[in-house]
Length: 363
Ligand code: ZN
Image (tube, rainbow, N blue to C red):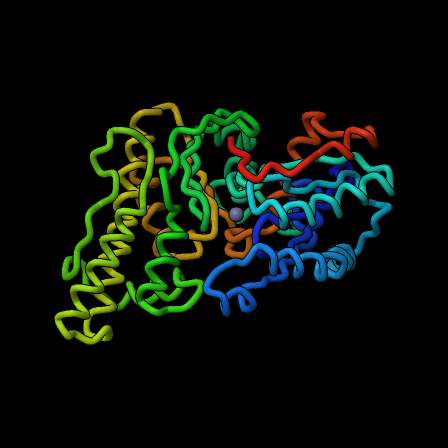
């Protein structure tokens, strides 16, 4: 292992997962995620207060486990990193404060990180042996280096975010478009609720879509002709609500139409994403790669379909390994690594104390 690479300890408690990771450079030595999904399922969604209590309870254990699995001690760590936004305020501060206290106690440089930058760069994470997840990253490394992958466009889709970002290089971002209301993940969960799938609804919806036929039940393509790079999914959600009402009022049982319904819904989501991604690629002709990230890419179909479009333009396709698509601290540590490389860290105790969470943080 390259001993010059810094050891990084990273925290993320932006939503309902308590995550801690240890990295050596871009290599993940450990990544522990304590999921609360079963607890929140009872309530049909994330309850910030309950999430906070769980974070408080879990974080010391998750922290111990991350160090232990990485076979390092806190004294070995070079930088401590934590998400300071965006996310749920009362949850963000649990991980952030825990990390700040450690940094002060052990006199370590501290790095606050934007969670969405983590999703953006998650495709550049490497396993503990130093192998990247995508061939395109390995090829760039063997060739002229990762700088070769830029400029790039990033498509980030998660429970709370749907964004297109122009990436000149790591750390240099311009937001091109975002959702004006609901995010893709949110639309999946809300429609999942209408269909009585429970929480989270997305995974069931994408599974059911595989069994349905395209074109049987159709939905409007959101923002198809909006002539910008923004997204919107609340209209689609409303259309889905009316459609289910109509079908149920006709006396048709859910099981008769639910697969085709999910197929039609998935097709509308996919087409809206493809339209915007293609517009962005055409508008920014200098890009060499498309980076993707966020929990919605747990749908292999979405990952594959976006990949098909990316390849058709002859671009590199950079996506994270499955375990780094949802929220995790490894991706946050990776951002910390890049910031450390460019000298962007805080050493003064008083300055570390001043770092506050920014729930609405953006690019
Ligand atoms: Zn996230």
